[in-house]
Image 1: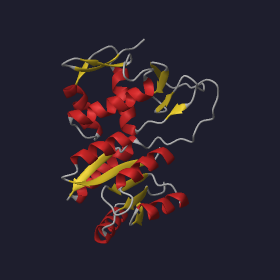
Image 2: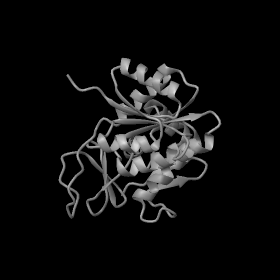
Image 3: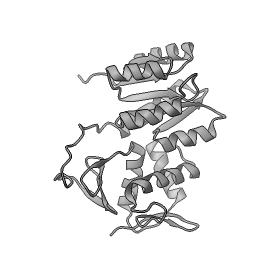
Image 4: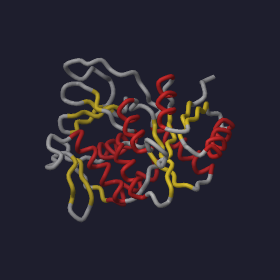
Length: 242
C-alpha cells in the first residue's frame, strides 16, 4: 500500500488551518501545518512534501516570497496558492513565479480538494536529479526539440544544450507538450484555454501570455526575439519546429 500524499499547509488563520488539516487528513493526506513562512521553512528542512498550500497574505514573509523560494529550492513540490477575491494582480504574479494553481477564498472544500488532486496528477512524475553530463543523457523517451532545448515527453523533463535539466512546472510541461503535438500550427487562445481547462489550470488570456513569456526565457536564445514560440498576430502562438 502506497504511503499517503504529503501536504504542507501554510496559513496564519488558526481556525482555517485546523479545518483544512482535519478535512485533508480524512481524505487520506498526511498533513503538516505552519502558521507563517518561518515555520514552513523549518518543516521543509525536515521533510519535503509533495504539495504546498500557501496563503498569499500572511504577516512577515508573504506567500509570494515563500512560493518564489520554494520553486527555486524544491522545484518538484507542487504549489497551490490560497488567495482572496481581490488579489487578481497577486494571483498573476504567483503564477508567473511558478505556482501550479490558485483557489480564491472563500472556497468550497470539495473544489479545493479537486484542484489539489488535479495538480497532483500533473506532478506525480518525481524523479531524482540527474547527473551533470556534457550532453543530455541517453533516453528511450520521446524527445522534441525546442530551439536548443529538448523536451522529454515520457520523463516530463526539459534539457538544455549542455545536458542540464531546466526546471519547469507541471503546467509549463503541459503547455510545451501541447505545442509538441501541434508543431508549426498556430493555436489560438481558445484552443489553448480548452486544453488548459482539461488540465485544471486557470483559463484566462493573461495567464497564458505569462506562461508563454516564462517559457521563452527557458527555450529561446533571445526571449525578446522569439524563434521557437512565436506570436501570431490576432491569433495566438505557434511552435516553430526545426
